Image 1: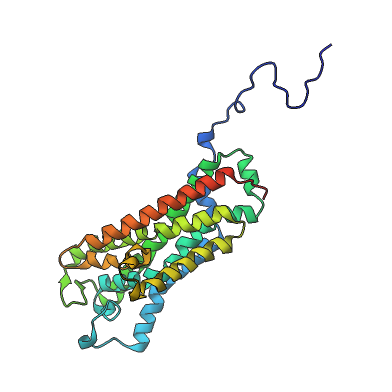
Image 2: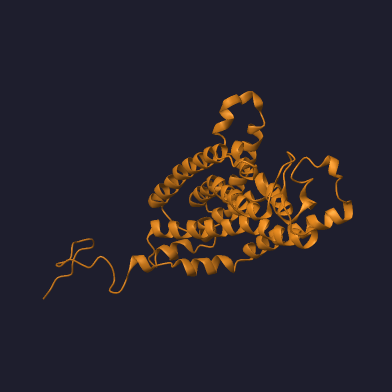
Length: 294
């Protein structure tokens, strides 16, 4: 007659590490996670707002009139010069705050939202390895963030071309770029904005792993973005401002100069990537040790 094993006692033979047929590398596919995020109401709202903004700005120009040519010294005052100019204006308006919101939302409302719905523990019990869960959610958040950043100038290009025609990109300094050359330059500018926002994405994601309140993670990232922008305006800080991500957020304008300048963009991207790596390391390290009860 066999005696029952004491609780916690080692079995007579080694048990398999996981159930038959279980493959950690096949859990939580990117396609499934992307579809889940795409169907969420906040994704549709953000997409709708960004798609509608160029039409709102166009209507504002139609109602308020077009600035006189003698006064055209900024990207906004040059918005009606051509389709490419209107696209650049949309990017100019979005940089600094407007595009921060979807980035913070898509990356900060990932893990925290699962915790607030009390579904995070069920995902981990599936079981989805913790590192894979974070990697999948951050990758999808970045993909949606990139789509949001691209959507604004892309719609602006279409709307601006329909309203003001296809033409050269006029610059505030008085020079211009041929339309064929302007498109790849605008693409570089959009890519820089995406890379510069990585620090906000990583910050929001780290906060998302540290709290069960999605609004806290999203709001915290947006708040830090506002504070760094305010500090960058304090000239008394001198060279210390160069350590603020906000200091380089408009460096994409160097891509639209007659002679392409890489210096400011490279510094901005390097700073953003450096901060992002540290914040992501904190997110993965903290979540790996976190006692998930929600």
